[in-house]
Length: 143
Image (cartoon, rainbow, N blue to C red; front, top):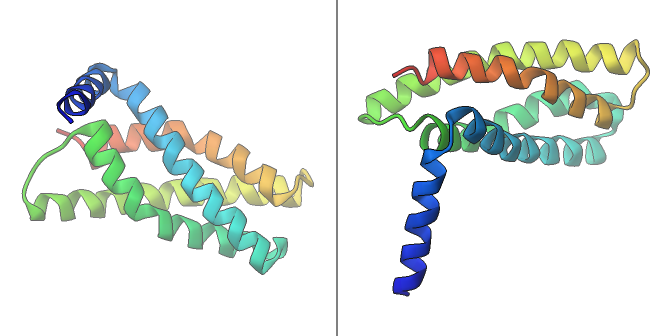
């Protein structure tokens, strides 16, 4: 047990020595994967025609885990309950901006480029990553 604890401490220390951009890509990749799995499952059960409804639903559902993982594992902000609520509200603002960028890209790829909704969402998520990082770092989780 003692070795396991030492191992986790080493991993923890290594993780926080990584630049925040790398941590954001890794944690963001995890969050994007969770969001995409939810999106794909909803599409599967609802049909591809409801891709925009699947998109908004998956963003709402995945927002809670995204907030927690970004706060704890990327931007490392601390504070009291009020601070968490304030950051969450700012994150919601970032997600709204990211959502609209994502929705426009997704709609354009599905309707004009005739790319299926599954692949279109992968492309859209990739495009929104940089915008989301900048808004999180300099607005939502600003130290």
